[in-house]
Image (cartoon, rainbow, N blue to C red; front, side):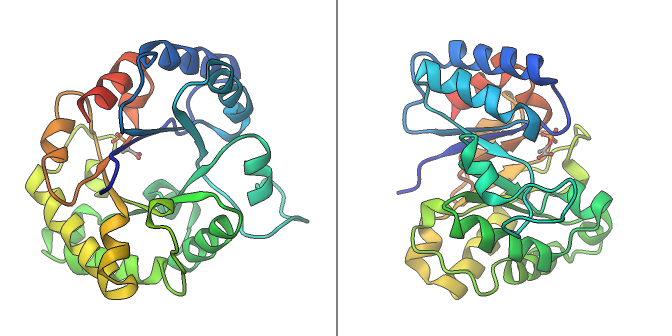
Amino acid sequence: MRNRMIAGNWKMNKTYDEGVVLAQGLVDELKDGTGSVDVVVCPPAIDVKGVAEVIQQANAPIAVGVQNVYWEEKGAYTGETAPDMITAVGATYCIIGHSERRGYFGETDDDINKKAKALMAHGIVPISCCGESLEVREAGKHVEFVVEQIKKDTEGLTIDDPSKYVVAYEPIWAIGTGKTATADDAEEVCGAIRKTLAEIFGQETADGIRILYGGSAKPENVGGFLEKEDVDGALVGGASLKADSFAAMVRSA
Ligand code: PEP
């Protein structure tokens, strides 16, 4: 019912030329196809056009995304990128609400909600991130914390096609730390996310929305997460920066 998804978040890594080389490596690694797995790579915005061109020329089944958007159409918003600028360079996905953007750049759930609406109005698929800090987890409040984020981030959204809205559960304490949540930890929260989505959008829509796990996911551990009912794939940081590791994760999905 839901195609699995492996999405790579390159973060602020890879110059334009390095990004093109990584994209070519991925195209080569995945030349035999990706089966029913949806594959997305999200390079830095300045690399997107070059990465998209490599993928288009090879006709490879890899979608391209960006890591941020601003919700206005155009104007005096120095440093920001509008939705139609994203589609114009061949990107079809956008990560929003990453904990690094929430933490370092002060993004709020209200911002993330506005970004989701703007993206969806332009046919771009949001990969909307949520997740708790170590402090919240140790206080045993992780499920209620993430459920609240989901409610605020989706407020007033209309989801006609559930394959066009993706959630990524990324516990902050597991991002880039080498410390992964267990598959049961991930399922506990991903199951609660799906239940919340069902309450908001109805069961059928919730059953069609992909929920990814993110946080030190790598070829050796991704299989365990994917065995879980409510985990439909992975959002991958560090391990997406090497074509062979990322391709291995796609193959094991
Ligand atoms: C991320 O930042 O989205 C992420 C999951 O990073 P890492 O895989 O490096 O923990």
